[in-house]
Amino acid sequence: TVFVAAVSVGRMTGGAFNPAVATGSILVDRVHGGASGMYLWMYLVATLLGGFAAGHLCRSLKND
Image 1 (cartoon, rainbow, N blue to C red):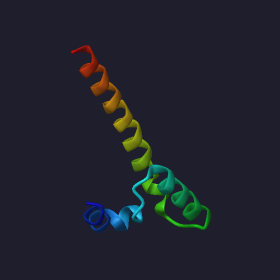
Image 2 (image 1 turned 45 degrees about the vertical axis):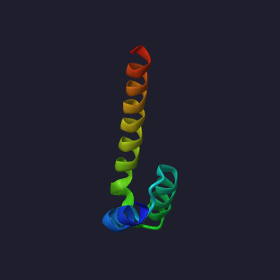
Image 3 (image 1 turned 135 degrees about the horizontal axis):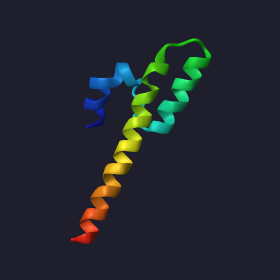
Image 4 (image 1 turned 90 degrees about the horizontal axis):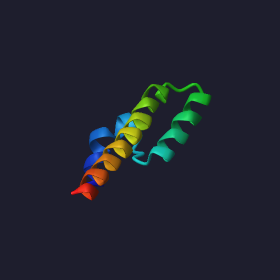
């Protein structure tokens, strides 16, 4: 699974699937003049939406 994910989005993400690792490497790249900063939103939005979805699912399962 990790291999398939790395091959399919490795160029875009740099192979980092942990948002903390990705954010750190993107910020370091930006400091050195890189253009990977345009992908930072992806990690921030995905993390927030995933947390919201998990909380909503947990709450709805708890009420059943």
